[in-house]
Length: 595
Image (cartoon, rainbow, N blue to C red; front, side, top):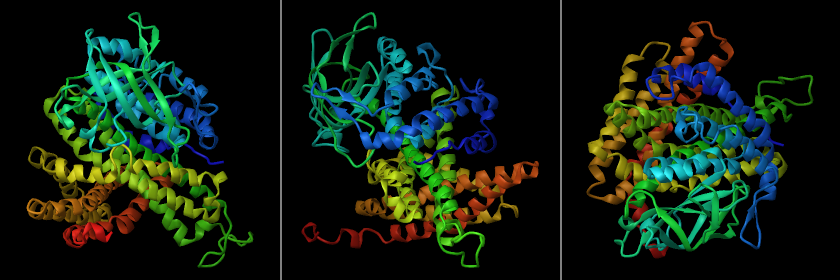
């Protein structure tokens, strides 16, 4: 059976020492989040994930979800009880406003708990994760009546939520959707259509499911500008909040898929289902982007989470598995062979995963804190800067954390050798589960196009220039001898990113295919620079703790891991730059029929 221990010490190091969360005490919810409280809350979250959720992951994958003849869906054994404990513990609404039953803590805390939960069981974590995304959308776009009707029950975990976008003929291009909405005399709408790939579309974890459905009102403009968002509950609530009649929405089938078997991914059929407008008519995509952006960051966290749990298991296996002798002579002469942790290539794989995980977690928390500024600050300039950061980094986090998260799951499986291919060790499940993260909530190629085509030029490049200025400012003020092994490589990588940006400015306008051909490499280059910046921030904090007399073993390990990233991972920026500057010529030259 796989193991998992939540990275509590790593997370607290980032919050307290790297990002100094006390600096955010002027924001609502942060003053209450003292270091002691955060440690207590996150310790309880870790306990829940390690002891209650994680043991369900492997058997839940084997059992999967079952659809009954009446359209109802049963989740794997133990999921109901675990979800009840999650809800009763207040975790669903830990960052939600107190007026609706939440605890009002920073949304960063929900992000952290989300990582722990996805490492324990990604399939299970998707049920509350989607609900929290739906809560965010209703909070920001719902009417006062809608908030009062839905949020308390969702925050309590009695009702859950989903996001319904994709249809058989349209995924990324939502302007092609066909689901129809017809106005009714009472102000409601009748929704008709079919949605596919709907995570948590039907299940037995809650008494009601609140579907957020993108549809087109009769007579609406063609394309994406004619889409509207609707609340379509599985069971219609009465005026007093109790449950009324079953709505015209049901699960047609459960998708047969590669991984995340414990999550019910459904085909959802809407047959004159009653829906209620949320947000403005023909601006559904604007409202849905609230949930989509939440989901994209959440999916990036899933990539990190799988990478973390895969690493923990691979490292434990490498310390125990005896095979061969070290190249420099036996390290454990009393044993018939040395553990494989002595072999450089095994260490290469483990160090690659570890160096990514630690920087990836920092990148997530840095961005999550900016999200809290965006939603909670009263300073307009601070909110604009934080929102710029979120817009710029969201596609980077979604894509690079899931690309590398999957690659790291494969690396961890490789550490096991043949045993990694056998189901009982759990490594092949991590590989299967991680694969979807690169696809859903906008495939990673789309994230790259979003970064290059929309985020870089937005507001005259304001967000990108702010990122450049921050990293350059850091490099200028941290050039002392202790930091040179870290800031030197980061400076080189930043130069590559700036060269790539200038190349795009010069070559993409006249020939758009150059932008498309460069986009994925540009995103990966950007991600490496962002991770390198995180490593510098972590190393600086580790050096400060060592100087203050902190325990040396863990902080020294931080310095070594950071140096590994700078020496063996960050130099990949030069390869990405070369590919970008090669342009689109050979990529686009062959005619379609040649493929």
